[in-house]
Length: 361
Ligand SMILES: *Cc1c(COP(=O)(O)O)cnc(C)c1O
Image 1 (spheres, protein in one colour):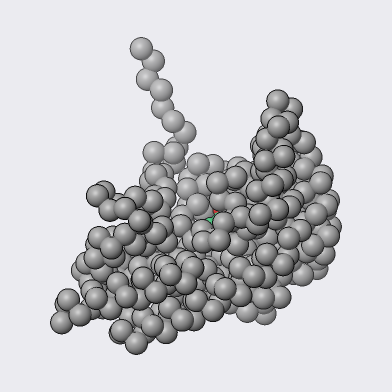
Image 2 (cartoon, protein in one colour):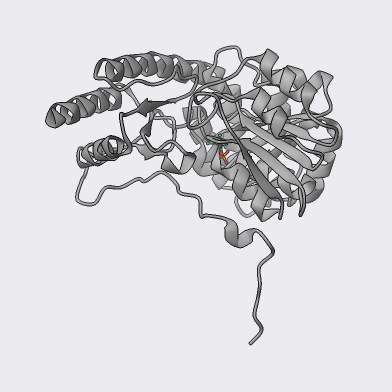
């Protein structure tokens, strides 16, 4: 029998750990571990996907023109500079596959999103982790981490799992300081939670070394549909389209995403509710001695006094049917990431942490 050997780097990939959805022996669980929208997709998106289901014998559009047009209209962007993928994860993978190979370096920060490392390794490139400053992206550290071999620099802004963000001026300083041959990728998965924020799109108009990724998995509530998009210079879109499979996105996902992006009232409603209950929950936990940084996302990163306390609180919450996320894998062992659910979920979390703290005393 032939011994099959995977490409270098592949066996260094640790499998992605998704948020748990069940607790053994506990019913009525609330899943607050994957930053999903507690209100689900827009009713218009659900209708559009149901309508599309009747035509599933047809292959989907391969140029995604209708969705790119809708995104362009709503966000004021050029449809020709948009590419759609099976989640923004696929766009991240395209970027690594197209621009980073053996000997090349892919930078990201110490509490950066897991897919940057995974996609870099899958492409055979060398992942390079750079320090943050108190759970905030550190532009100086990223610039200092660049070498002549740097090809891609990923930052999520706002970031997951910290919830923090840096200013447009800082992002511009990062872009302008990168060495030639390196591309800055701005992951805007949570951009819609920041009112009026363009996720860095304006920087792309004046630069050739900035790219933006976006997703329908968070505020649009379409994580199950697997659809996201990227925006960048035409040359880069052209390169990525050569890597992309012609039917990478399903017709139901395209229909749901198009209806979602046009339903701006629904997005506004979700953003407003999220901001309200995020502030309420952060304050309630702070009063219990569990601080968090100001979050620009749909989750908060709750900090405990030790790893043991964070893990004990996680187990306590699980027993109440409340599933949050451990983030030790993101170099944050003393913290728990808690998605902002609806009012009832937030109240249950605050109640649960309170009871946990009282039980400890
Ligand atoms: C959730 C998330 C994504 C979205 O991934 P999809 O593949 O679009 O579901 C991307 N980046 C970050 C930082 C995220 O938290």
